[in-house]
Image (tube, rainbow, N blue to C red; front, side, top):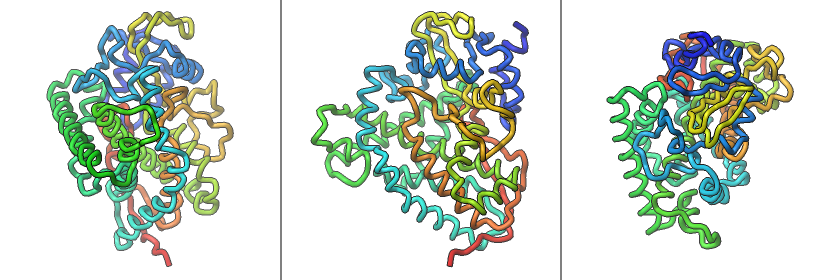
Length: 404
């Protein structure tokens, strides 16, 4: 194996490649499973990534890896359920999904539409805007606060904590002691905030998912206070961070290919497939991490028990063995079936909500932003290699259309 192949994951972590990691993924796919210098294995092709996502021998629990490369910051006895294997994962996820139902999500459409239009109404006199700060961030954070029953006025506090957590948790920052310390402190502060909030909800029921779980009289399964805190923190962060990237990556892509923005204006009914193509083409989550519970052979490569494995979702989504002309953005593409929300038992809990928010948001943006143009390409990207998206997306417009 060449030195270049062995160090490809480090190049993904390098911020210099954040704006365009896809040439690196193309190199990765020449060897579907490759061991890196630090002992990690990287899986980069569609069939192999999908197989690993479905294989119970690949654990999501970082505590089970011998190498401890991805041991969580603010280490706890037990992480949130998305980082647990069955049966514990199944027990906790079941309690969340019993309340976070398809009916709840679909019923949010009018409220999402209301928030979208209100955000754009505030921009009617602007000729320049930041898609991230003015729109893509406030939309999902407002929705997830309302879903959970978290006071929206507390957003500035947990926004700062979330930013520090994401920076410190990023694999590329595992040797940055200062960022890790900041992330540990942010984790403690966010956990303390949620613990106090849950205590108030236990004493006084209110609208929202957390209250529904806490005061469920029907279920025989009950979350402990620690489970509730971890679940609440997870849903708060995951419920908006990836959607910010999805909306922003979508608009960046449409502004780079204005013919498809015009197509969305003409035929808004095609937005579901367009969002799926964005998820394939510019996914908000670039990779997920696993640890092997036993020796596993994948693509004729033996991965030793306890190894840390990076499953490169973004690379798999552009595998030419799965997709014709994979580097072309094609909103009319058939049979997309990307891996951006994962697969199997750990498939993203919030996928239906993220899809709905993005679809409603993109139709409104396409309709109400008149002659939008990128002011910076590539835009400045966020630091994270895992949650990849622009930190800001400055756009000029002729005007923001008013709704009569």
